Length: 469
Image (cartoon, rainbow, N blue to C red):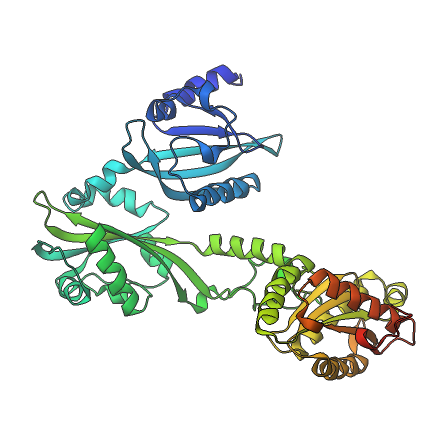
C-alpha cells in the first residue's frame, strides 16, 4: 500500500474541522493546521518553534501553563490526556474546547505529540435545547467516556440577583432526575433511578453540593472534585511494583488508597430564551487513573522506591522548612545519621537481593519507631538521615532505643535469618543553626567516629574532642 507523503498528510489535516497542532520533543510548536491558524488569526511562521504553552490562543497564567506542560510530559511518556480548556479567538472571544493530547510514534518511538481540539462552545451555549433533542443525543451520551445526567425543574424559575443556600435548597426541591446515560452507572458502579434526588447520585457531603449548586446558579457553571469509597475497586493489581514491599508479597497502600474512586463533576445551568432557569446537566468524569498517575509521579519524585521512605531531595526540602521554623521559635531539633554496619558482608554473603530486603526492613523499622512528625530518609546506599524534634539528650535516648531494636531485628530471607547492627551520630541545631548542609556534614563527621571506634554506637558531635574536629 502506498504511504502518504508529508505533503499529502498535511493536506488531509488541513481539511479536518478541528484544531490540530504538532508539538516537537522540545515542547515547541512545529505545525498547526488551517483551522487552528484561522481561529487564532496568525501565520505559522510567526508562532513556529514557540513553547506550546506560550501560544496566543491560551489564556495566560502560571497555573494554566503548568497544566499544559504536565499534559505534554504525560503524552511524551505514552499517555493520552484529555481535558476541557478555553481558547481565545483572534477577535478576543473565548471558546470552550475539548482538548486531547496524544503521542505520535515512529518505529515504536515517540517522536512528537499531537494536540487536537474540538470547539464545544455551541454545545454549551445551546444547553436549553438539549432536552428537546434528548433522544437524538442518546447515542452521543451513551457512547461517551463521561457520565451525564439532567436534573430539570418542574417549571422555569427566574433567579434573583442574590442567591444564598436557602434559595438554592428551594430551587433544588423543584428539580428531579430526568435523564442519565449508561456510563454514569458504570462509573458509580450502581443503579441510578429516575426521579431520584441528586444526593442519591453524587457521592459528596450535602454542604458541598449546596455550595457548588449555588455557584452554578450564580455563574452558570461549577466544577468540583470528590471521592467515593468503593469496595469494588480495592483490587491493587494496577499499582506498579514500586508500591510493593521488598518481599513482593503485598502492596503498600499508605501512599495511595486504591479503594477510592476519584470524580470530577461539572454542573452546567440551562436557561430558556427569557433566561429563566430550567434545570442543569452534570458531567461526571472518572479521574481515578489520572490521580493514580499523579500519585505515581509524586512517589517517584519524593520517595526512595526501594525502602518506600523519603529520598534525599524530599528530606532536604522538608528539613529546611522545619529548621527555619524551629530557629524562629528558638526550639531545638537534632539531625541524626544512621549507617548499617558491615553492609557489604550482607551483599557478599547472601546476594544483592538480600541486601535490598535488609534495606527495606531496616528503613521500615526506623519509620515505625520514630514519631510521625520526625523526618526519615534514605540518604544514600546503606546510610539514612533523620530529623528529630528533640534536643540532643532526647534524641540520644530515642536513637539508643532504636539502635537496640536494630540489634534485635531478625530479617528472614530464603529460610535464613539476617541480623545486623548500625552506627549512629547526632548533631543538634546549637544556637538554632538552620543550615542543613552544615548540620548534616557535622553529623556525618560524628558518624565517622562511630564507625571507627567500635561501631554499633551513637556519637554526639558536641562531645568530640576539639583535636578531632
